[in-house]
Length: 287
Image (cartoon, rainbow, N blue to C red; front, side, top):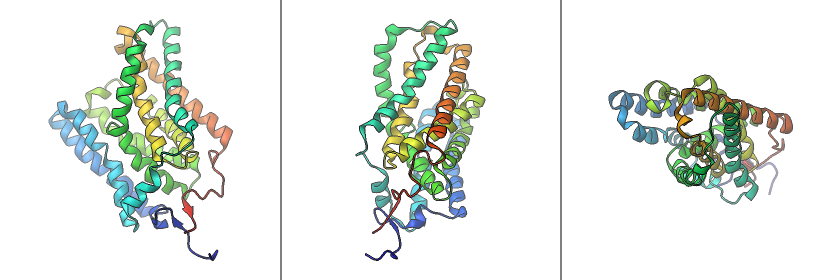
């Protein structure tokens, strides 16, 4: 094989599908927001009770936009999916993906107890069942499907231009901004404090980027940590005080500090490459 042969992506997806120009990067963001916001805003304004259904359908916006970008880059959706949906990764990756959000919950519960909130340990068995159920639902349709866009297309596309750390931060900013309409139109977000939510999501994006890069860049791992993060709310068992605005405020503040702290620690430990070798060829390899 000649060393001068052009590099192609695994699954015969042309390099242009993962090394797009600025125009296609902006196109992905614009199309993602248009697909999602174009559904969320009018539906939630007209029928707030339809929020859960609209939330699920709108959540497919990033995945659909990614598929469109792959086709515009000359690739096929099937080849793209074969490359990003990888189940055979180290077991430690699955443990970390599921376990890191659980550690955050432990920190939140400890902070709640320290501030006088009663932690109801007797509710944990039922809460664990709720965690499993919500984890499965989120992985399939409650947020996990977003990862086909965020980590399946945008993260690798940006990593062709920036470091994994820079790409992870950028994806996190886009990801957080994409949720913006929910703060105004979705009742379930009334108690979410934006000043804590944004840094939490950006930091979580960096954490996911590291796990994703160290797990053969498999979107499965990104889905797992996304699902565990969302489902971990089921384990915040503080009895009747769970709905208290004060308790929720403290819990969100603690979560923001914890996620940012972990992201910073990982960035310091692994550098801007987040542990990925500079000559990594996971995305590009010889045909």
